[in-house]
Image (tube, rainbow, N blue to C red):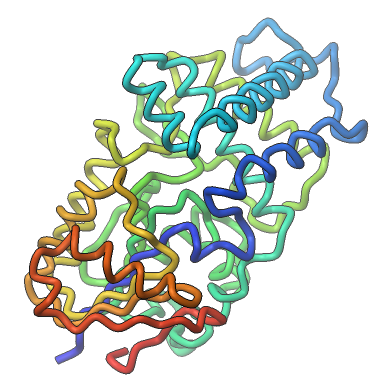
Length: 341
């Protein structure tokens, strides 16, 4: 019988494309500078008519710049963006939390369109994909748990299917959350913190900010991103962010976490990549990993000594960690492929 294998990905898994926590303030500062270049300026006369917002596209764009500067300034006063977000949540500053999510979504989408996909996702898919299968062509005994909002996995996969649609890639990869039906007996990708998208409050349709993964940064890209910002921050009755922090009580993320817990409970092998088990996520990590009753072996992949530090932090997640085979992996050139695969 095949081993059931689960990967747990943190920010370090996408480091070649997207910043880790300590790099975010500088990355956002450079991003804001780029957003203000003349070729990206939007019209001061034309509106997003379908949103019914009175401001012009150019006015909304300047509003977005101000929001980005607000975010950069406030992150500098906190240890991380997660800390600032939790403060907004606890103090019930809902409009500001919505603004934070909108700004971060736009940054993540734009950066992933601008930069090449992290090549480790590419080599991982190349190693595992079965070219003889047109559908469900990744191992059925494999599950991916990700704390990242990005679509690095989907973008890397798109090159192997010759399709540019994000929603089509999400369907092939059995991604949750997404506007597709999830199945528990095939390869699946669970985004525990949600993803860079949004949903309608009326029909609960899940939408991608940009669906074309081949789109390059241009004024049309910027217009689509600014329209998303307007929908999220100025048309608040119709749309909600699909980003959900671990400490929020969000129905969509709760469903994803429940699915992930059920469908990884029979895991025998866990591979942790670029994930430091932060305190903010501990309750959910305990819920999911605690249900892996058949777990025998855990690999921890991170550069140098950090992989051993992950093992120490893991003991806060599993009280029986001493009975498990815990193995540090310090080579981070490729995602680790265990012999059990």
